[in-house]
Image (cartoon, rainbow, N blue to C red):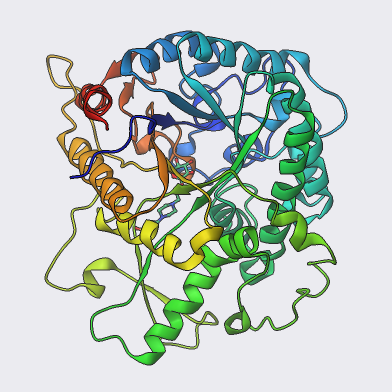
Length: 458
Ligand code: GBH
């Protein structure tokens, strides 16, 4: 296996609502997740992020874990309503102060802070005005980015604007299984454009307001799209339509300056009925310093069997690839490491010189992870997952993809959105009764892997 260069960064990721708790402390405004998780039936067993990992109070202990792990980068998210309780206008200094201290602690530990500005916790005040269906939210996002850049941008040099605009659009606005809980199906499409516009405006704001040069990335959830064995032309057409919606709807405007053909979805008007305005695409296509890729698994697609309204059907992996069952995570997601190589080489092939350096900004798996009698957590399946996916990154790197870093999801067990605390993704186990952190076997493995990767790097 060809080793990754010494400059390759090893990291871990988290997100504000999933770990911080302290949802009403120090003047924080409500977010859509505070509202949504209070809705009966929205989250499994009525869990909420009210306390979560209590990271807001235990951040120093968490930074000490990161330092011990040997991370050189840490990806966290800034809670927009902590900084701007109403989403715009009044700045809450105590909220901003929390991230200011976190950044200093990270730097003192030799870790590059890599904040994401939006990981789904929109201020409720902006949701009350339509959320991401309202074009004005893009402008407010840039105003918020400017505030954070002015305060942290003397020390933070690597920024991520949005986390997974696709997943936020689909779960939040098309299906309603995530906040803000809207079930608009294809009517949710403007949410994609408004997030992308927000990304572009925020990119300019970061570069204008950060005192130090700002490297700007976006983290997309990407999936390689596969077809079943013996696929027909109709299956291939369905796969192309799915790829356009899940992947290219975001990477094409970002990297090529235009939306993919969405006629399979009945959309032939290039303005999407007035949503995409003159000049927007140039804003969206502001040059990126890197593309963040969150990878979990491929998606198998076939032509729709019924007049379902959608031009594709998502297949169960075991139905798509019979006789070769994939291992599954506790979530039931298939474990397919070569999908990550396929994804990275596919991005390189499609975008060529237009593809900026790539960072894997999330990759990981949920397991049941119960401590044994002796208190150890032997998450051997997570070690296999990490090892094989890192090898998949090495393979892509050896094939010429400019991949610069790997952030695992997640540092800590945390609030897994609609699944509450039932899915554990952490390298570190969290006891939600006591807040106690216990490094799992995978933590020790990753620590050793990072140390060895540094020793043997060319
Ligand atoms: C990310 O989303 C989020 O950024 C993060 O906050 C979250 O905690 C983490 O991942 C883990 O969920 O039905 O088998 O095809 C991931 C989005 C969407 C990826 C659903 C996997 C379906 C798997 N996910 N997708 S499958």
